Length: 483
Ligand code: ABC
Ligand code: CA
Image (cartoon, rainbow, N blue to C red; front, side, top):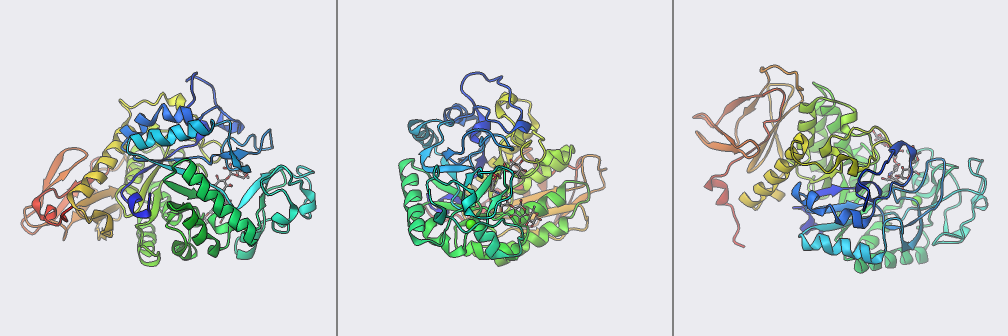
């Protein structure tokens, strides 16, 4: 599927080893051990209806190719990022038929498959694990897809993130598990990687790719790679800085909104957090990226960062922070387990087994919240065909803990006052609706009426988001384009 076709989607990110197993749903999994827990593609197939019922129409799975086997200081390659051979599948996740079956099962539900891919490195345990490494001669590359020392950049560790050549041509990881850095300056290797991604996408009818470690490969590598893939690509550039990230928006379709992520966490992880910083980053994003904030993947959690609920227990803050990704310009991405209240800290503790939750839906407050947010977003698209291309605006607020995001026909009222807030917090609505207009909160099925000047002050209830108000009347339907 193309970038345009992905705009309207919302993505559920899962770790294949940790999402669902076939058989023993009680199987123990201690994420702190870093060992495989037995999840598989067949497991995922068994729970696609759960994901669909949450309102998602795309699923991002772990890398699919075969990985380093055996134990390391960090456990096993359960996450899929320690590539050994790009031409064989990870047999722990299933075989080629089961990956095809997963792809078909998604498509039959109208959902897209996104596969995570790594081309910056392969993983290798050095000849002297934990010892000092001086050169490529300290590795035996023969088990890898690229089996020769010359297929890799001359050895050095990535140590100084301000030195871009080092970031691109040195090795990530450490002397226990080195992520040996592929020579992506070598044209025959480049050609081989491009052919590989073309084949992989075709073989499994993949709809989009999430590209790992994008900032660790020269920028001009990416246009041909993305073209060879032939489908939507979203890149991981792990950085809080919009200016650093911005040039990458010229070379791939879309980027994970990491600057927005850091700003979102700092705005909502405690009462009275930095909302101005969030507005600043979002505005910079709109101004500096090739397609504004539209082609960003907006997220609150992922597998590399502590879960949001490890930072706060405040349900009001959690609900407000979760809502943000669904009411902005970007494509919403939810990391599995957030809706079940998972609260694991840093990698590897944020990679809990989903089956231990029992995939509960009834009586789970965050499950209902996610369903409502996906529903509101889809409804907004159906009321205003231009919703996806209308940039969000932040309405000025008198209350420093109030955030009002207007993206017609949607108006989201968020606050970081927290659950212990008193009733004194409020939002000013002004300049978005007309005089005496009635708007619907599609999440709570309540409505509000603007005053004679089209303004209104709305008070917050226990720090909860006043969620999403839609102007459902004909004013916006009038903007519908003929289909
Ligand atoms: C393993 C163990 C961990 C252990 C670690 C040392 O080794 O599991 O317990 O702590 C995979 C696995 C990991 C594994 C690694 C290494 O491999 O999933 O569990 O960790 O063996 C991607 C993936 C990630 C994956 C890999 C490798 C890459 O999403 O899951 O990890 O294929 C860098 C890379 C980034 C990478 C990330 C893990 O490391 O750039 O692509 N993610 C700074 C740097 C970033 C750097 C980050 C973390 O630190 O700028 O480039 O990311 O090291 C902001 C600043 C940022 C700053 C952040 C922290 O703060 O603006 O610049 O990021 O404010
Ligand atoms: Ca590199």
